[in-house]
Length: 409
Image 1 (cartoon, rainbow, N blue to C red):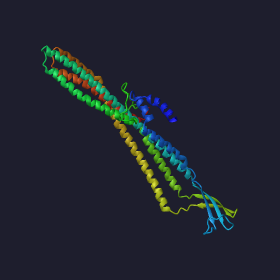
Image 2: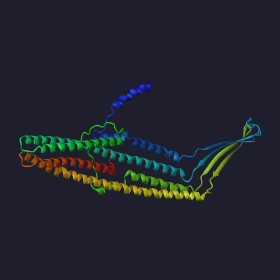
Image 3: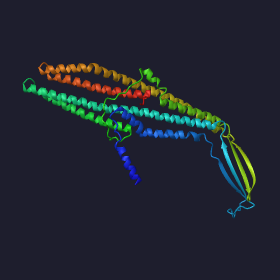
Image 4: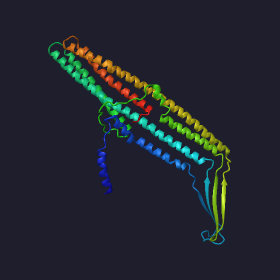
């Protein structure tokens, strides 16, 4: 009954859960709250933080009980006056600051894992923004093709009227129909691209590939804060991927110090008591010191720690170079697409529109042929489609730049 009641209460929550896709903000929110990869990395971060305290804790004490004077024929007999029982308790104490070093290394490892989660969040948000841009673009491309097909139908009607009046050949109307068929084929391809973009977006969101998505309300806006490439690359040093490798290098450096401290022995303190019959016969205090006899093995462990530190520093430098390369490539893509979109939107589109209007008016009075009219229409609507494509590339570049800048809002 309790399970049924809880299920009934959970159903309305599930039914009223909003469907992402209507805006870019809904996509970001869904990624941060529902992506399983981020959730798993968050749990791994908590697990790493939970390892800090045990790393510097004292080892568990050892308790022992020893029997002397047992009868080989009857070892289970009760304690007698001729049998001894020894009790001992030992505790090992690492000295020379080794516990603090182990706790520091564990803390640095936890910081590195936490930074890995931030890096994954940036990359996932960038991937989600890019997937949403493609999802929106496919929808807009289909809308442009639909407008183009509608204009071709109008042109076909004009050509039919002129053919009925004997002022144009029937071939004009047939060419308009052929062009519509070709655009229908392109429309099918764009719809397939939209389905692929939706599946990719759902994968980034951590949902089923066929899960429903809301239709975009408006064009996504991805602001880039940096004013230049140099300013964008200034953030590469503070990128969480670089900081994560730096934290691992610091942990490796701490381990180098720890291995050097292992040259000095630890001690074990113990207390004990001897029972003879039913009374305590004597007590003892023990002090054990490790003998650093395996010097070759110790030197190899120190060498291993130094090599791991050098490897961590080299990996940090490699990560920094990779982040800078990604930033430069993303900046080039963003600026190039932005300039192309501005040129098309501010210059080419008005020119193509004017050419179309002039060609349409001239065709209606018989001053130009149908091929000129069709070419003007293709240039005009082709420029509009090129504008949408350039805006998509601009958004993709902006998403990649924002991943370097660290804007995860």
